[in-house]
Image (tube, rainbow, N blue to C red; front, top):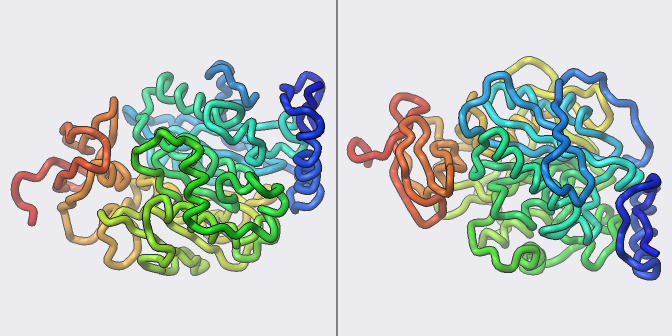
Length: 422
């Protein structure tokens, strides 16, 4: 007889594993529930953000709930950011405290929040460790992908600018989405999460702490195996960690770095390292040949397990510490939006000598692939084609093989350069 998920309520969606196969995983999940700092339910912050629940977005095999935050002013063909909450949290708590809705207002993107509940997992964790949920075309992974499809259809969102981020179990699920749907997500930001498919040969608790060491090539192969027929560009990945995290230890940041730099064919030695934010967060960046930041690791000093936020009204501030696992430090959501290429207040990457994305210095011309132009915010995609921001000129297919020079004049208006560029 099929056994329901741990902590499932009556009527929860059944699993199809026999008891003999399920018991080891069940015990592993129990270890996660009892052994992590997220085990005890925590009080939630008072709701401040109005979310719209979407009840019909697909077959929803993962039994998730979809919410949308739509800014009052939304441009045509907006980008989509999917947000995945941590254990014991829900979509409302994540919206109220992460700072993402404020950034959606400022930067003009559509925010989609996926939510799981106790019927799926007693601790309200996304099931990143379950093979029925972390594979392409099934379970929770497919439900999130269906939310993206609905956002594109219902809101006219740009399918070429879809991003995902999340905390803890939501961070691990972010890695799942990047691995299983690299054809859907252009980039993702994993906050206190884990490498994809760590539980292929380990239980979840071991993956979380002390972590599992694998070679970059082996980690990368696990991602390739998630979608073997995929030949397109790999999503870019940002990795955020508190250096005092004992729940999902910082070793996982190193393993995630190894997984995604190997996928991009990059060295595990950063191209550059700098300090960012009010707390001197260490930012390591790994640049592709065209100057695009393919992988980024942000190690936040002095905090444990949670989403770094910096409450306040300043341009570089966001979020609230009104709920557990939102930790006063740096506005990680602002930097994540910047990594996605969505930050309209400062689209340029702040590192010295950065060739891309979007150097805010005096240079007004950029030569790069269509893929890199989109990632830097100089172009958008629609129907598989790339269009310059401002002029709307068709630049051809959205890929890494078509290269153009764009000239910016005035600020924020890009056109194909036929003169005036080096």
